[in-house]
Image (cartoon, rainbow, N blue to C red; front, side, top):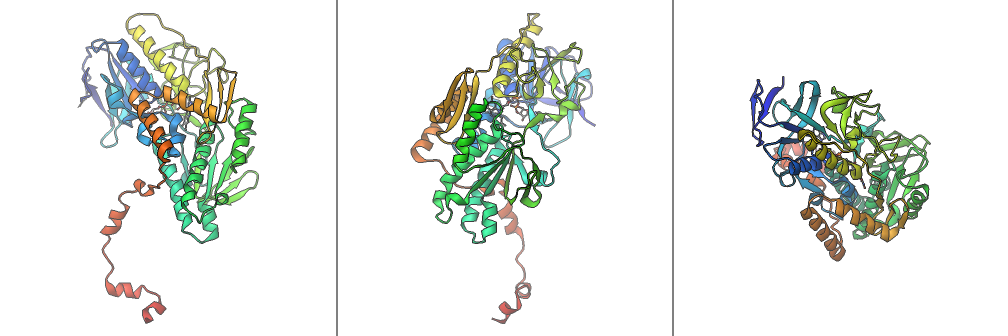
Amino acid sequence: MAQTTELTDNAAETKATTTPRPRKVPRIVVLGGGSVGLYSARRLRQRLGKREAAIVVIDPRPYMTYAPFLPEVAAGSISDRDVVAPHNRALKGIDTLMGRVTQIRHNDRTVEVTPEIGEPYEITYDHLIVGLGSVSRVLPIPGLAENAIGFKNVEEAVAVRNHVLDRIIVAASTWDKDLRQRLLTFTFVGGGFAGCEAIAEIEDMAKSAIKQYPTIEPGDLRFVMIEGSNRILPELTEEMAQYALEEMQKRGIEFHLSTFLSSCEDGHVVTSTGVEFDTDTIVWTAGVKAHPVIGESDLPTDKMGRVTTNTKLQVIDAEGTVIPDAYAAGDCAAVPDVHGGINGFCVPNAQHAVRQAKLLGDNLASVLRSGELKEYSHKNLGTVASLGLHKGVAILFGSIKLRGFFAWCAHRGYHLYAMPTISRRLRITTGWVSVYLMRRELVPLGPLHDPRAEFRAAAIPPKPKQEQASSLPDEAKAH
Ligand SMILES: Cc1cc2nc3c(=O)[nH]c(=O)nc-3n(C[C@H](O)[C@H](O)[C@H](O)COP(=O)(O)OP(=O)(O)OC[C@H]3O[C@@H](n4cnc5c(N)ncnc54)[C@H](O)[C@@H]3O)c2cc1C
C-alpha cells in the first residue's frame, strides 16, 4: 500500500504521513521531466514566485534528453553527456522527485510514485501537468522483445553504438564466415525519422570504424532497413524522401519497403515477403505510443491512448468539457493543430512539445492569477534530417528544399539552437570541432554495460587441479 507523502512547499524534502497538511501555496505536479516537463516547469517558475506556487517535477531520470541528437550520439559525433540537461541545474527553484509515476488518480488529485529503491508513495497536488511522452510501440513479434533494442533514449543510443563497434571488432577476429556475416549484419525496423537518421548515422560510423581493421572490407557490412509502408520518412515530401532513399541506397543500405518483420527468434530474421537472414543487431524504431500509465488513469484519452486536450492545453473529455486542474502536452497528448497536423492533431515532435510546454506554463500561471488563457498555434518551421556526416535532407518553411551538406548544416544549426541550456550548446559545438580536427573516437566500450562481469569472474574459486585434469579431453591428458 502506498503512503501519502507531503512535500514541504519550497523544498524537495519529503516525509511520509497519512494525513496531508493543508498547503500554504498551491502545488503543481509535473509528470515527466522531458521536453514538456522541463520547459513548462521553467516557464511557471519564471512567471510565478515561490509564494504563489510550489512546483514538483517527477521523473525516473535526473535529466532531460534532447532526443533529436540521439542518432549523432550513436554515431559518436556528440558525447552522450552533452545531449542531456541535468534537472538539478536546469530546474532552479523547482523541486524534483526521482521515481516512476505508476498511478494517476486525478479525481483524488493524487499520483503514486515508485522510486528506484523503496516503497511506492503518493503525493497530492492542486494542478497537474502530464508530460510523460511516449514509449516504443513493441509488437508481439516472435523474438522481438528478447533480441531487439529501442532507440528512444540516451541509454539505448549509447548501447547501440557500443554494440555495433563491438560486433565489428569481434568480426575482425573471426574466421567463421557465417558468424562473421551475422555479426556484420545490422537490422533496423521502421523507416521514419528516428529509424532513417539512426541507420544512416550508424552506417557512416561503421564505415569509418572498419578502416581500423584490415580484415573487414566495406562490402562485408550489411545494413538492412525493414519498413511496412511503401516509402520512408513520411514527414517529408515524396520527392525529398525519395532523395534520402536513393542517397542511402547508393551507400549500400538495403531497403525492404512494404515489408513487415514476421519474426526474429535467436536473431534469425524472417520478413513478410519471405526474406530471411541472420543478424546480431535489431534496432526497433517502428513507432511510439503514449505512455501506458495514462491509459490506466482516470484522465480522458483518445483511441491512441493520448490525453485529450483543447488548444489551451487543458485536459478535456469526449464532449469537450474541461477537466479542472489538469493540463497536458507533447507526445502523450492529443493537442488540436489549427494548421492541420495529422488528422487535425499536432504531430509528436520536439518542435511542438517545447512550444506547447511554454504556452502551458503561461496558461497555468494565468489561471492562478485569474488571467486569460491563450490558444496553441504553431506552423511547422520545417523538417531537417541528418543522413550521416556531411549528409542530410531538409525542407524549411514549407518550400526551401536542401540536400546534402547544406541540409546537414541546417540540421545541426537548428538542433543546436533548440538544445536547452547554453552550456550544452557550447559543449556540443566544442565536441563537433574536436571531431572535425581529430576524428571521432571509435573505440567500443561494450563492457561498460556489464561492469561487474570481470569482478564476478574473478570471484569464482579456481577448480582444484585434479578436477581441471579430469575435465580435459583424453588426448590432452595423455601428454
Ligand atoms: C531518435 C529520436 C529522434 C527524434 N528526432 C526529432 C527531430 O529531429 N525533431 C523533432 O522535432 N522531434 C524529434 N524527436 C521527437 C521528440 O524528441 C519528442 O517528440 C519530444 O521529446 C517529446 O517531448 P515530451 O516531453 O512529450 O516527451 P519526452 O521528451 O520523451 O519526455 C518524457 C519524460 O517522461 C519521463 N518518464 C517516462 N516514464 C515516466 C514515469 N513513469 N514517470 C515519470 N516520468 C516518466 C521520461 O524519463 C522523460 O523525461 C525524436 C525522437 C527520437 C526518439
